[in-house]
Image 1 (cartoon, each protein chain N blue to C red):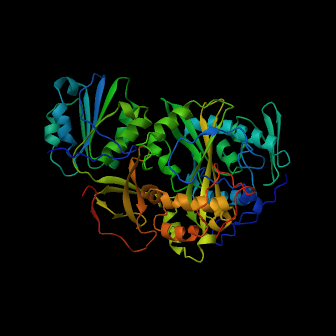
Image 2: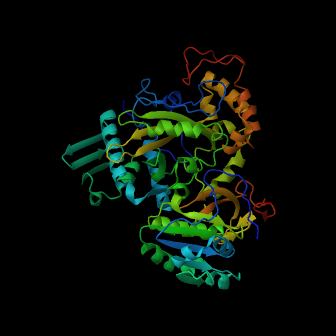
Image 3: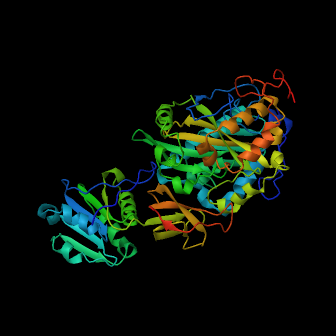
Length: 355
Length: 198
């Protein structure tokens, strides 16, 4: 289908919005009425038509605006994109994976023409038509990872695999949930997750690492993760926390429906063929509380999840101070009826709000 | 002087051990302040015959005792910064079988470990022992400036002036802990600083 790209911003006047289609396909992250960490991995082999799971790299109405926002972040802080010297081959692997996937999955938007190592890449939404030599860094305006991830939504961590561990050795990180690539680059899987509460004790990371080390070429995996963001701000980086942190205090009972956003990460994992690295795209989707409430099931469920979330998690996710106001708002959309299992909104079968 | 026992912490925080002699073709000691005591405690004539000490006294008085160990070479410098080029040269010239021993403050060990890693020594092959001050080398996540010898939490970034709280999250590559703005959500509300382990 043809995508109408939004003219919108993720900063200053925050003109970001979700169309009705975008709300319906929002990756609501709770498959039941409560939440706790788990190794919630599944194969990434498509999904329901028009869902965010359908394509290998989902392209949606926010594509062009997100790429503009990324360029602004990088102009302010080039350290958001870094690649240790041994990761260049993995960058080419990633470039190939994204170009092949997008040109096959969205032939009306992207074209890849290959004649040996002479490649021509056409990106119609961003107005790019470049010819270059595959595996020759001098023929691209940026390194291969930076070049392609300036044209792909979501953050990208490229993980080297050695010593039975994964190492955060390259990445493009401009839409992150409050972690710093510049600080974490070079760390192993346990080290960069060190600040996460509860999950280490539950053995989550040991099991997750075991799973990830065994991901094979052509058999990608995925999971959802989530947090909360006030205003549709993509760049919730620690680097800029002293600037955006104050926005959390601007919530009021009147504006919470439009200002408070559920922030969901679609995390996918692909083995890369030449480098044996693992690429870990972290795609961020934002949806205002008000828009989420248009699905009665999501209204009921979000209230229950936020109400029952352990204090440590609400603190770590940064919304413990705003939780009472969130619950005041969300409780209006919870009539106590049961909800259907799974993440989908089930708009045709779930009853409308009974109060 | 008794050794400080660090509280249990997160997985990125370095853990230090106790130096012990290992078989090696040469032995490089990089130390500051009370780290001298750890070297003295484990030194043997055999080790010191092939031992090279790079030492930053920072006002302590161990130099004569270290020299008395008769290492193959001895250097005393006024600061890590002053010694840094010498450390890089020593590591670059190192032969297979070199043992690396780091002891003293966390800032010294972190920076020397980083230098050794850059020279190709895996960090897991480097021995460390903490001695002396528990002050930390901190990176401001906002301006990226490093503040040395931070003993209190919170503290003021010596570069940008923001009030930062002291995290246990540690980067070997930067040889620093992470400092994050403490009053971003309530400007001016900065608790009185207290010792990091108080």
